[in-house]
Length: 443
Ligand code: DLL
Image (cartoon, rainbow, N blue to C red; front, side):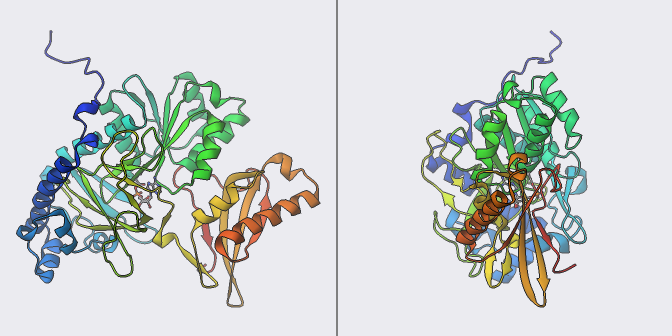
């Protein structure tokens, strides 16, 4: 023997996974970690120290998990204002990786990891994949973008740590993706749900039936998607479509993941403490109420995040899950508070429009929302692709469908929007996060 273990075997052991801890133990672990990380943030990050001092709340006053509500919030602009390294708690020689997330404007936000942070990240990705039924022996095609985006490398390290075979293909070159999926016997795909829709469409054009391939699971996240989208994806590809959630500021993908029940992502609470707040009053809301998800990293060493306001709107569900995991679930994240646009006084989220569109037969899950302003009045146009058969229908048939969609959307939003039916392949396809809203009012 050369002392090297060439056969590490499968990495996920449910018996020792914190997913199934009795709640008392989980809470004790959370409290212990919370105290440690808050002290670390206070000692090493000027912004956290000054915010806590302003509130007159010192780390040693944390006695219970409930006391977390006395801690200050952190918001995205805090990362921008301290760009690039101002929130790091570790010296640079301990930081082994940087990622960055491009904002819509200006500088990106930068996040940092120690060696141990990377290990924790991989471990939550192992738990995510395992919750989705993957194991060693699976062949995972990782089509999340590699690079500064956390999706690619986050899923990559997790898949390897699981003991699966990972194909680091990154996003793009869809024909090659499909060829490899077929030739390599891929069993699971990781990418955004919108990109996978594009793969389904391209495979059909290439005369490849995804349902006949060994592909059995999709690990989809990085953007909002609806149940309606899941109902379109699963039968078309013959797979189970799982929702994985995460954000760069907290760690990347692997903050939460669905299990076989597909009933909302489980948050890996031993590493990420979740609260729901009212975004207006900032009050903590009870489990089950809808509000903004606030996350505190419990073990992130290089860049701890204290009560980070994600802007993602959801609820927390503490009900026991049939899978046996004791950790809470979040409701699928359908919207971000900053995705919202206001039309004629009504708050509108793209996911509401998606849900309404996909209930109507004959539509394709490719749509775009265009906002315009005419003589001071805001208008919404929803462009949606329809199947080739529908598009070839009579003018009367098309008009009927257009009206039906208009009614379906009006029922949800309470306002009338202009619906335009477009041919398949009209709307631009994305290889990463889809851009659903084009706001021409500001252009
Ligand atoms: O998107 C990390 C990630 C990569 C998650 C791959 C899952 C899979 P960011 O680029 O920082 O990080 O974007 C984070 O994307 O605050 C949500 O608004 C949104 N998001 C992420 N996952 C989901 C999801 C990655 N499953 C932001 N459902 C988050 C809805 C999601 N929205």
